[in-house]
Amino acid sequence: MAKKKFKDVVNQSDELVLVDFYADWCAPCQTMNPVLDQVVSELGGKVKLFKLNVDRNPQVSLQFGVRSIPHYILFKRGKILWRKGGYMTKRDLLQEMKAFVS
Image 1: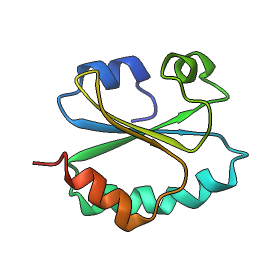
Image 2: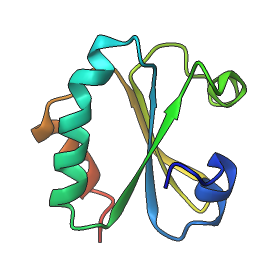
Image 3: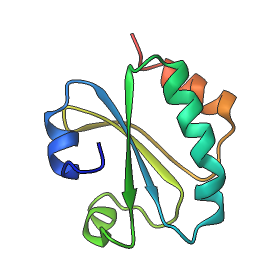
Image 4: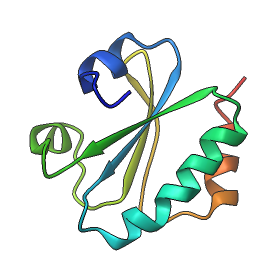
């Protein structure tokens, strides 16, 4: 999904898209990678993960007011359903996502 443009993925997707705002130098972001993968996997493909490098996409980060990373925003058809910054446990993230998965 990385090749697609952020705007297209977020605005045109009928699916839930969890955007991970991260940077390569961010240790907590790297710690969250396996957590994100496990959560997306456990949700059985009902949530798509889109990773957005803030260093390469500063305008998108600004647009959504992302001031610290890691930061997560859940979109559906371009609307923000949920957002949270910082490290999360797998259990917490899974619980949060399940609220939006029908």
